Image (cartoon, rainbow, N blue to C red):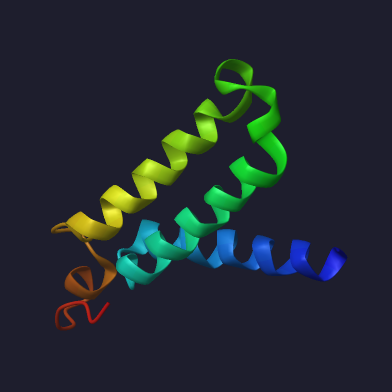
Length: 87
């Protein structure tokens, strides 16, 4: 449905920006990983691994890795002199 496409697009846009800026990386990572699970299951799973869902699987694992490892030392909070991240 079109409404779901808007929700997925918003999650990908806001989640991607959050990952780049290093804010709320845990939440963003989990939401992006959830989107990729559904993308693999509903769209790319039938195509097989090669030429199908290999890139989506890499994005899923990258989002989970960043979510578990944290944002690192360069975050927008540290660059502009704020505290540490809450998410």
